[in-house]
Image 1 (cartoon, rainbow, N blue to C red):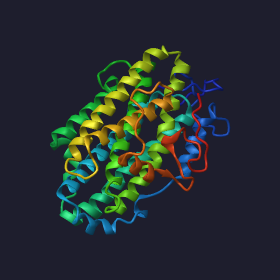
Image 2: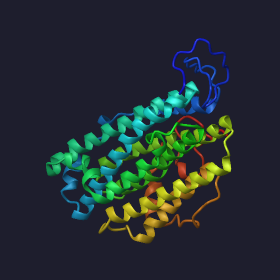
Image 3: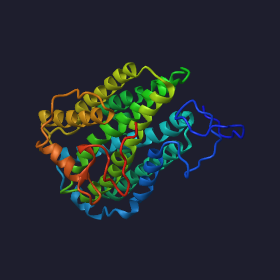
Image 4: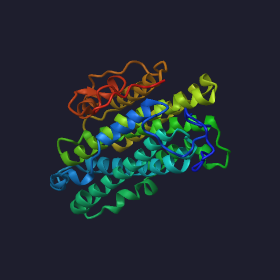
Length: 341
């Protein structure tokens, strides 16, 4: 673990892990500029859930089909679990080993944003679910009561096993921890975003809330973990082919379990055929592979398919009309978030 107070430190250029930090964050002289850039981009996109108008969704929900209501609730049940888990994983498992103080600031800011997303779901619970059907608590407990969601949540949690099983945390665990976070941010969250965006012509407030959340997840958190994964390898001199293989396997597992859950949760919802779901998730996974510099795993996806088009339409980034999934993060917000490795 990093030292919090270390006046004896003589380190000038900070390592991501295994460094000897003084405990002081100097934003004027970052060791790796990319983390300062990511942090400033996070600040540029500050928003609050109270700014999103959900009032029309209350009436709109009354006109959803039973299948659409089930889809909506299961999706938010999953997103609630995801954001709650990653908030704690960042601060309790991951950040305490990261020895670059500006990267620490990024992780602290991410934890704030994940907590903000959790608050967003409370607004949806109180302003939409409670008023529309009188039950906002049901969604918060779905990860306990729905067998398929419990299976998904358990498998997501298992990706962090090295932090929970008493094993001494080493550099390889942190590299795979970065990939576990990347799988959550870049595979599981997009599946959830798509689900709510697919109802966007009816649940416009909810779709707007998810759009704000997606700007954080796709615009900052993904490049953060791509860079952390690669810098952990550089600073710890890990066997990269070995860990790249495990990283690929973890992302493929995440993709396959999201396909399974998306097929289950979208039963009876128009537009969600099994081939379309598979095509969408294969496209998402391929984009994660591309950002990590891996050879693509799945055959080239059909980007004209309806689900991919929905996702790309809603995930347009700010007013630049540039989509994160069409390359590295270049025109997002006011910053240039090229991957730095």
